[in-house]
Image 1 (cartoon, one colour):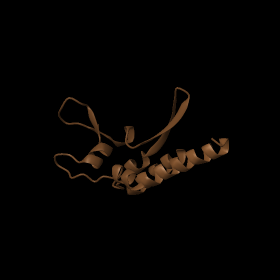
Image 2: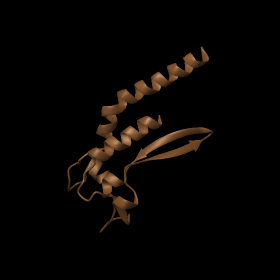
Image 3: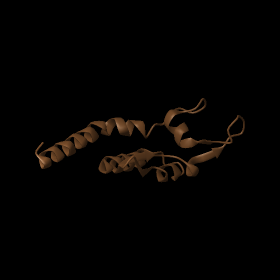
Image 4: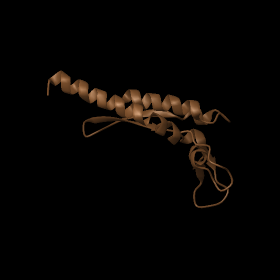
Length: 108
Protein backbone atom coordinates (compact mmCIF):
# COMPACT_ATOMS: atom_id res chain seq x y z
CA UNK A 1 0.00 0.00 0.00
CA UNK A 2 2.91 2.32 0.61
CA UNK A 3 4.04 1.77 -2.99
CA UNK A 4 0.55 2.79 -4.18
CA UNK A 5 0.64 5.95 -2.05
CA UNK A 6 4.10 6.92 -3.24
CA UNK A 7 3.20 6.35 -6.89
CA UNK A 8 0.00 8.38 -6.48
CA UNK A 9 1.95 11.24 -4.89
CA UNK A 10 4.68 11.33 -7.53
CA UNK A 11 2.18 11.13 -10.40
CA UNK A 12 -0.04 13.83 -8.88
CA UNK A 13 3.04 16.03 -8.40
CA UNK A 14 3.84 15.69 -12.09
CA UNK A 15 0.26 16.59 -13.01
CA UNK A 16 0.02 19.57 -10.61
CA UNK A 17 0.06 23.06 -12.02
CA UNK A 18 3.49 24.60 -11.91
CA UNK A 19 2.38 28.22 -11.83
CA UNK A 20 4.22 28.93 -8.57
CA UNK A 21 5.68 25.51 -7.89
CA UNK A 22 4.14 25.57 -4.41
CA UNK A 23 1.26 23.27 -5.32
CA UNK A 24 3.58 20.57 -6.60
CA UNK A 25 5.66 20.84 -3.43
CA UNK A 26 2.61 20.26 -1.20
CA UNK A 27 1.73 16.83 -2.64
CA UNK A 28 2.89 14.33 -0.05
CA UNK A 29 2.28 10.98 1.63
CA UNK A 30 1.29 11.01 5.29
CA UNK A 31 1.73 7.77 7.25
CA UNK A 32 -0.68 7.21 10.13
CA UNK A 33 -1.50 4.40 12.48
CA UNK A 34 -4.88 3.63 14.02
CA UNK A 35 -5.89 0.58 16.05
CA UNK A 36 -2.55 -1.04 15.29
CA UNK A 37 -2.97 -0.65 11.53
CA UNK A 38 -0.77 1.51 9.37
CA UNK A 39 -2.32 3.51 6.56
CA UNK A 40 -1.18 6.09 4.07
CA UNK A 41 -2.85 9.33 2.98
CA UNK A 42 -1.88 11.18 -0.16
CA UNK A 43 -2.68 14.87 0.27
CA UNK A 44 -2.10 18.15 -1.53
CA UNK A 45 -2.33 21.69 -0.29
CA UNK A 46 -2.01 23.11 3.17
CA UNK A 47 -0.09 26.09 4.45
CA UNK A 48 1.95 26.44 1.27
CA UNK A 49 -1.14 26.92 -0.91
CA UNK A 50 -3.33 29.07 1.32
CA UNK A 51 -4.47 32.48 0.14
CA UNK A 52 -6.24 35.22 2.10
CA UNK A 53 -9.92 35.77 1.37
CA UNK A 54 -11.13 39.31 0.69
CA UNK A 55 -14.73 38.71 1.76
CA UNK A 56 -16.67 35.93 3.43
CA UNK A 57 -16.63 33.95 6.65
CA UNK A 58 -13.28 32.25 6.23
CA UNK A 59 -9.93 33.98 6.51
CA UNK A 60 -8.22 31.92 3.81
CA UNK A 61 -8.80 29.32 1.13
CA UNK A 62 -6.59 26.59 -0.25
CA UNK A 63 -5.91 27.09 -3.93
CA UNK A 64 -5.06 23.38 -4.29
CA UNK A 65 -8.77 22.74 -3.85
CA UNK A 66 -9.70 25.65 -6.12
CA UNK A 67 -7.32 24.29 -8.75
CA UNK A 68 -8.82 20.79 -8.52
CA UNK A 69 -12.49 21.76 -8.53
CA UNK A 70 -12.56 25.28 -9.95
CA UNK A 71 -14.24 28.42 -8.65
CA UNK A 72 -16.93 30.78 -9.87
CA UNK A 73 -14.28 32.73 -11.73
CA UNK A 74 -11.84 30.02 -12.80
CA UNK A 75 -12.28 26.68 -14.51
CA UNK A 76 -11.11 23.53 -12.80
CA UNK A 77 -7.64 22.27 -13.64
CA UNK A 78 -7.74 18.91 -11.88
CA UNK A 79 -4.55 17.05 -11.06
CA UNK A 80 -5.38 14.83 -8.09
CA UNK A 81 -8.51 12.80 -8.84
CA UNK A 82 -7.75 12.16 -12.52
CA UNK A 83 -4.43 10.72 -11.34
CA UNK A 84 -6.22 8.47 -8.86
CA UNK A 85 -8.73 7.28 -11.45
CA UNK A 86 -5.94 6.52 -13.90
CA UNK A 87 -3.98 4.46 -11.33
CA UNK A 88 -6.86 2.82 -9.44
CA UNK A 89 -6.73 -0.52 -11.30
CA UNK A 90 -3.00 -0.85 -10.75
CA UNK A 91 -3.45 -0.15 -7.03
CA UNK A 92 -6.15 -2.78 -6.72
CA UNK A 93 -4.01 -5.31 -8.59
CA UNK A 94 -1.07 -4.71 -6.23
CA UNK A 95 -3.30 -5.19 -3.20
CA UNK A 96 -4.77 -8.40 -4.63
CA UNK A 97 -1.30 -9.74 -5.45
CA UNK A 98 -0.10 -8.96 -1.93
CA UNK A 99 -3.08 -10.81 -0.45
CA UNK A 100 -2.32 -13.84 -2.60
CA UNK A 101 1.34 -13.80 -1.53
CA UNK A 102 0.29 -13.77 2.13
CA UNK A 103 -2.20 -16.59 1.62
CA UNK A 104 0.38 -18.68 -0.22
CA UNK A 105 3.00 -17.97 2.43
CA UNK A 106 0.71 -19.34 5.14
CA UNK A 107 -0.72 -22.01 2.81
CA UNK A 108 -4.28 -21.07 3.73
